[in-house]
Image (cartoon, rainbow, N blue to C red; front, side, top):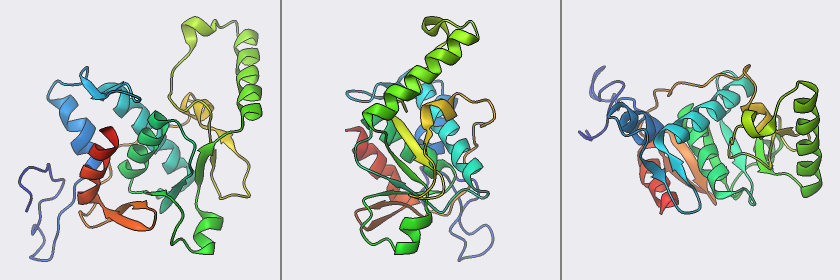
Length: 216
């Protein structure tokens, strides 16, 4: 048993084959915040995020994943071209509810490619259209962008909730909708696959180091 982890259920609680449950995002974000480190830097460089900001955005994206499917979808295909911060938060959000973040589609079956939700970078024309629509909506509501804007870090990203043939939704807009709630960390077995990197499966336990690698 890894004594450094904060187990939701300790291994062997229900017998010798019980591997226990934990959540890597709880380890990476929730626990440091509980220790009073919320305002400290979780990520720096290309991804400038405090622990509190990272948890807020990741938990909100996790809530969107849970709204896509209940329970949360088995996997999320993350395409190339996302901003580094959006990529990091999407991976954390997916892992928080037990969704496997797939980076690189190698090894996926045709059915998985056709049905799994996809997160991708929107075209420049789409981004411009979305920004114009938001500005018009704010103007009609009497809002001032400078005082009411929220940096979700998902600007320019879109979600295809039901696979490549579904209509794309601007993630930045979804993140700002009150209908999507922040999701709690799901208890997960340490051997559950939470990432696929070009066909290589990464377990929940291994994902801790994988995320730390992304932060370097």
